[in-house]
Length: 329
Length: 299
Image (cartoon, rainbow over all chains, first blue to last red; front, side):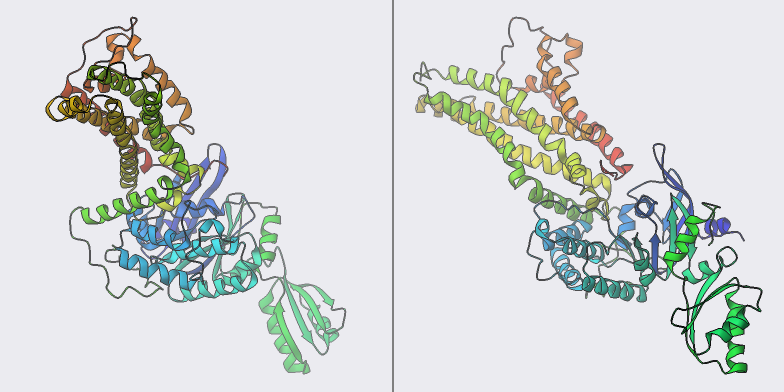
């Protein structure tokens, strides 16, 4: 079954976030075009530069925007029924604006009351959410007086306060100091481990690489790749040979054996002669050959690591590819 | 409260509350809607009408009483303290010429025209759109908030103006007029007109807020239309809100020698017409918000 048919088939499923041939145009300006996605639980990273369509995709996911074409369903729910959708979905937007005059506590508590919770429950859940993001001490201060990092955290608290199953976070790491970033990443992993669907956007690729179980790469409003980052990378071997960094005791021996293989296109000795940086069109065959050298020649290998199986490298390959908007998946 | 989760749902990561909310009963969730409505009204009052932003509204509502206080300070402000007819005419002129046409009109532009627009300018509308609340209910809650605020401000303004208009006159005559004469009836009628004006103009400006980025231009056009209402032929008079409001005022007010006369609509016709107009405009607003997208101006 092709991918489009697969997505269409999943449209009715209640356990996925499904975009079925979704396009969004702002007048004549393209937001996103012909997006077909089926997002499973776990952390999904939306990656792309500013203007690539990440926020549009997220706003479509929560019904703040309506698709010009196609349909979006979140866990089987249409996105134009907020009364059902937002029992299950929490969204921290990128907008750095808040209702005026409210403290952090009042913001979250008031919105939980708008959800329909009684005052006692709203108060309990507000404190719980503030505690999770480390904002209890600042709860009584006006949001307008918060630092950028504190505003990011109170947005997150507001998004998780009603115990959603789907958490959508637009650039959540912006403005956070390193400690807060580490804490937020740990929290996202904890939420994903508990079965939540966490969708996170970032234009900083290595951040997404750090936290995502799967990625959706966007460029110019098109999805250029999606899935597990290593799998995406493997599909690009022919066009962009994989780079492998090997630290071993006899790199010249390994280089000689490597050049006997058809799939190895380049092998460079490291400056300190402690290993090789090698490019191959068939990483699997290379690793088998390496094992053989270890067994036959007694090569001592200190470390082996892919040098470009990360989001940043893959993204660069994809947007530099002459095929443009095609893309692996 | 959240209902039973559909098949295939995942467990929530955060612990559930000790007492899980009961499953909703079949039928419309009136209790939930009531709680949501109350929550939005409470939040709107706190963020929009109890702070510095509302200062202009308070000053606007204070203007008519201020005019009467200034008048009372003038020497020989009241030519005959025993003539209550003078106060009745003064109140009729002040109410129909200033309170109704200027104070309530501009107040409703400021209150209702900004209920949605201000949220867009503040980039905070999405906070409401990201809650499990029917958007129609959000419109009603915001309208209700505007109504509460406008009625409190302009109702109080009307009441104080009424008291101040009669205050310089003879106390015995005043008591007789209020307690045994038509005084309380006049006051009730003015308050009723104020309420209907807030409801009608409120619905107009709430609706315009959905169609125009700035309510100033349509408000100015409507202000002009209402201002020249007395010059309009009878058919066109029926297309102005003030035509129906004036018909409910307890004391006629001369609009000058150039005014074109027409039959005043009946009292009940005016009340029902204004309420029907309000209902139609609120329906348009609810339909509009259902399809509204959040695209802030500088996105």
